[in-house]
Image (cartoon, rainbow, N blue to C red; front, side):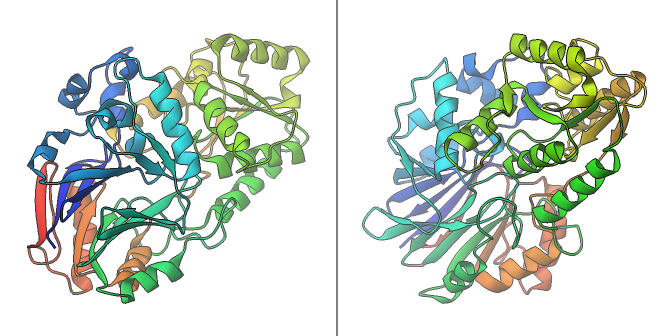
Length: 448
């Protein structure tokens, strides 16, 4: 059977992930993502109202025109998890393919919301829920399997396409968390089995974001302990304490909510995406928040809540807000500009339970946000966080578990690939032979 891979997006920069695998006459697309930084550099861009071709020209979504070179029928579109750089282009591109969108339950719910907000295209693709550990047939000779992984969003999976020539493992995005705050540990046992059964692993496509960092990525339980230590240390402060984190990071939001209660403050979630992700996770029973936890996304209801906090005393509340990257329209940025009823005073604490995504737009916006907050007297607590991506030891362990015949680095720029290339060559792979360094829009023929 011919097996061919189209590397469509995410092979020149972090963002707009998209890869297609053809096995015989069957094609599976993995991810359809958005590069948000390409949108944020423009003022007041609303992607919901934009045409896909304009977004492709902007570099915001994958240029999927290379798909016309693949001789086969798309049988499934498979996003690995609910981050925008993996699902953000589904509402723009999926309608071009007569194929179901197959994803884990939480991811499907986020995809559904994205499609609902789309104003340009009618996306009619069937939405199919499949949980980690389950399989489905792809055509007559191939099978799709979901393997449970841990990441900075719940319900993440690594999909595996089993073909007669061996398995193709799509390894974006994960860390090896054996003690997660929510959900099951990464299923390394299954990865080792896949590496040793049948024809083994024909190809492994890997996110190499942190490949240049030594050691292993800590568990989310480590971030939880760090957060508890910080919050306990400021328990007696009688002014305002505000926290921000990734809205999609439900495990981190859960910890913030619990520790707010421990230090005698009422937590409240503020911002559109904060309400969206936490509300969805609670509705699907992934997390159990207190009954009286307020979640407010609409601007007017957020400002009403801020007024209530100011009236009843900042020392009684713990706002958890959007804006950890300094996004211009997010809650924390508005607070820094003095555009909300919440007034920051000298000594008030702002906890960033997130790292800056290493990209110039984000770095600039975050810098500006912190300066604005500091000018109002806020004290910044930075980097209360652990990454959602593997470091070098995790990569060594995955290559040892899967023993793939071919390896394709992904989810980075050419510069970002370099540490992973060195690491893979340490394991006996060779660039140009079985280690394929590629770019957006390329084809890689694995078997003929």
